Image (cartoon, rainbow, N blue to C red; front, side, top):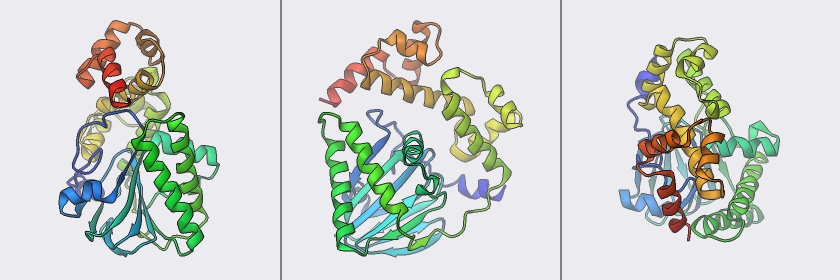
Length: 299
């Protein structure tokens, strides 16, 4: 269990320095390097993400990246992919320019499935180098367009962002990695159980299965599953299930015109009133209030 004890002390964030949910239920977040690092004196301390992968594109300036205790110097044209639960940190020069894209795994998995190549997203961190002016121009356009759509509210915004993400992923799949965070860490059995639990949640979150149901499918006890969840992400197994249900509810409330009753039934709730109480307990707002607030943010 050495992996658990060493990793568990590393902060786990939604985004670096944040523990709150994103303001809208997008499954992608895009910002410039300066947006966040400038607030932290250009230094992002080692941390990790559960359920999120990141792609950092350094277009200008210099940086130094830590990937699972290994350090690499970055210069203009470098791109790093950081999978979930990889301990990573950055130190940027004040003149660093580029983008940081954060993707939730439900979206990333769907894009990979559409591309039809599981190797598009590595299970260990990878660094790539853009050494061709034509390739650099294409990536500048893709990352720039992704960021412009993310901060905007144009028609078909989500679809265009996904198209830019697919272009970036395909480009990376065509190039060899310049460096990696080393061979895949030896995953203990507990980590394998936890990973399997996350996969099952993604597949069956709307079925309202109990923690005991998931534990039996994995082949362990519910108590041990909770221990693993606490060790890896400092949350209970039930909290992780509820998080995924809430994410689906938010997306339906914001991006569809479904009534609250229909949303509740789709997510396995037989009583819309109970769904409303559940949602408010998790989010702090009723579904109706959340939908109204999100609509204002997206105006």
